[in-house]
Length: 238
Image 1 (spheres, rainbow, N blue to C red):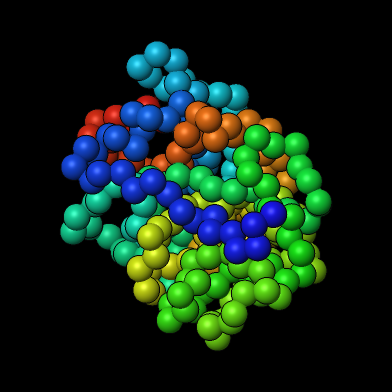
Image 2 (cartoon, rainbow, N blue to C red):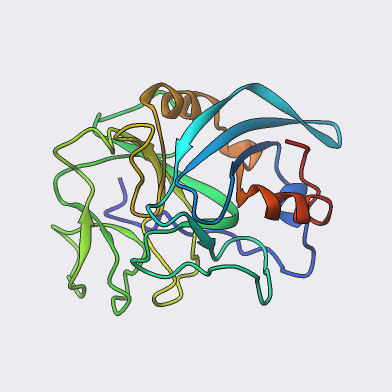
């Protein structure tokens, strides 16, 4: 295992082609909520069939940040957006289009095609904007520490028993938000600090379904913004 895992690296697509993020993808997860402030949302998986995306299995419930959503830094340049913009520590889940990165968890290995990071007690996610490691998963036991705050990934609860990195804010801009994941929820009404969480069975389904060879993408938006952008981003009907 690479000691320093830069799990949030992503090939930065040219921002002139607004649908390019989906053009290269054969798997899509769409998360929509009722409003910017909503903490509950619905997720639906899609698979490409020819030129269109078709629903894959049933939708499922997720929870968002305690303050809903704000525009994040993803695959597409949204220009001057209407609505809140995500910042570090704001308790908002990122809105936009994002690639998915490595899976992680408490077990030494996992049945998934995604790259997998076993969480030892020294794995941290750096949320200090002044650090050169901002928005990265690092092994704090072997990396020279230049940060004053981070999140210990090997928790005493079950929230990170299985999780997947959402590639928000890559390359990292200071204070734009960090350490955004899919992970296990505390419950269907308990929001996160900015991640998208779900019941254990559904994160396990994502482990089994996601294939990095199919360039999976997450689109996460309030429903009204999803409808506004659907044609422009070539998104499927909900």
